[in-house]
Image 1 (tube, rainbow, N blue to C red):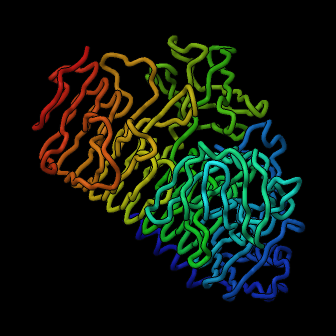
Image 2: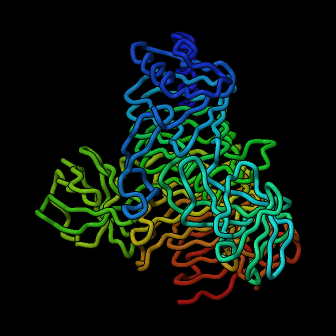
Image 3: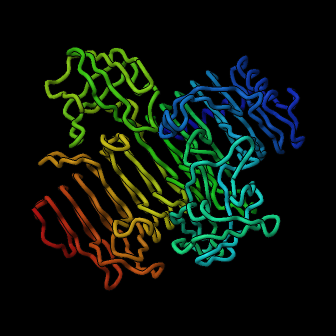
Length: 602
């Protein structure tokens, strides 16, 4: 009902909207000139309208950074002070403080030049972006297909979109006003859809010779290089200085029928935003382009959001990181200044500088090692006092349990999430990362050959500091096909793995997780692993055997550590399946199963 009302709202807004055509501002499709200035004027014209449609007649529109809006955003999970000390970003379409605007692409393609964020929505409400494709004149990912491989040489065909030069017998990847300096490489096997970790080092240390316009021969030590003929080596810079798109402190945002064919750095990042409806968002290379990678990192990344996030009829294929990641951010207590005042610090090098708390937010206090939440409080005032530090004044005094080294989580900004009818493939890492305490439903999706776990549930206050306990999660009616090949022997299809270094008796980080009516097509035995979880149900699932890859070292199908109220019932296994259950820090009372288990380790 809620989604119906949101869709109805957008429909009513469009029906009564003023159409603002970009051609009235000197922007014309297919003229290959810089559309940035004219589009900025068209966007500004929407400010005087109650409802507006920013209309792009079908065609190609080019955006250069020269006349683009310069912004200064601290974006979660992007870059450190060393990597990108001054957070300057140029933006193609910049919407600030706007309401009731639809960007209508009519099937157009927006082509961005150099390094740019395709669009930013900041403090906006009721915004819809639909029916367009995003691409880059020179994508940040370089790609080359291996044609000959030996211990002493490699011959590769360079993709036409991957500009390169050979200087002093070494190949350099460059773009429009940028050059790759910090290399990260992955091998893609197009025939199988697999992505494998690799290295640019043997090529960096070799001698390169152009033997045809787009063909290069490398001579050097390739004895440890694992590439095969017709595989594609993909190379990018490790620095996430840009993102594909950024949605910040905005509400009621709808993305529909978007083709994100290339994105620099992290993908579409939604940060401290509310009610996000993303349907038919396709993160994948342009069909017929010959490219295999669409995003240098994630597809959709959600940090500190709230309300309802819906991902429906989306497709993800060709990423160097996770298609979907939903989390908050733990900040560490570094100083207790008074009974109501704390100094906090951002701990991970890629996440800092944004307002993680504002007045009125409810926070959870927790011990970092155990992730035990022991009290909640309400923020009276919050202030960033440096890029890395925040000062928080609470409405009431802290619990006596609070110690320096504990962490705080913002539980006001935690979303409900629905992920359905979508396809996850062509990723080197996981399919979906989810850490939020509100209701989550993952249903009717296909997870096809994700390099690592199809679904990963973590929560930590010691590494990434990505926060969020799970309290109501249902995973149902999905297909999990041959996932986890990059993480063997820990190649469990679903992993519930909070990073609590201390497991406390009677306290469980996650709870109420149901995995039901799914099909698991597996080449190996590991299916589900869980840690510190209460109320975990795995029922009515079908497990089928494939011969995609050789099986590993006979790992248990199920692995549970410090869990309780676990049920493994009414599942259908293929003949001869490994069905053992391994438990640790549990007793027989903690688990109910109708299959074979191994003795518990105390």
